[in-house]
Image (cartoon, rainbow, N blue to C red; front, side, top):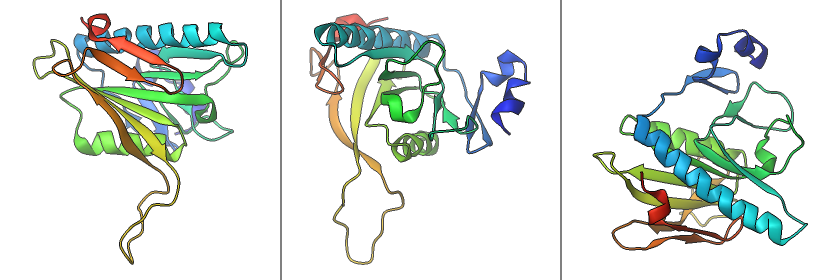
Length: 202
C-alpha cells in the first residue's frame, strides 16, 4: 500500500496502520492504562525538552505522542508510529522524519509479543534514531514496572570469527529503572531528563 492509498481509507482505519516499506502493519491500541502511561511520559519529556530549549538558542525540541515518523529522506510509504517521541523543532505542518527524531518509545502491553517488539526496535535502529525507550507495565496494569533506555550502536562490534550481525545497527541497553529500586529516572540524552516516579503515576 502507498501513502496515497492509505489517505483514501477512513480515518479510524488508517490510524491503526503503519507502512513498512509499503507493507501494511496493524497497530493494536493498548488498554486505557497504556494510554495513561504514554501521556505521563510525554508530559515529563515535554517538560524537560522545554527546559533545555529555554536554556539555549542552539537547540529546540518537541515531545509528542502517537505521531508518524517517516523513514528515509523522501516518500511517505515507510513509517512507524511510536507511542511517544522527541524530535527537533520543525515548521508547522512538516512531516517528522527519522533524521529529525532523537528519541522514540513504546509502552508495552500484555498483547505485545517479543517478535513484534524486536521487529519495531529493529526498524527504529535501522532508521538511525539515537535512543529507544521501552516502558513495561505491571501485570495488573496499575503502574509502570520498569523503564529501559537503549542507545544506538553503529560502530564496529567484535563478534566471533565467521559471525556477521543480522542488522547494521542495533541498540544497547544504556539504563534501567524501576520504582522498587530508584526514586526516579535520570538520563543525559538528548537533554537532561529527570523523572520522579511520582510524576508517572496513574
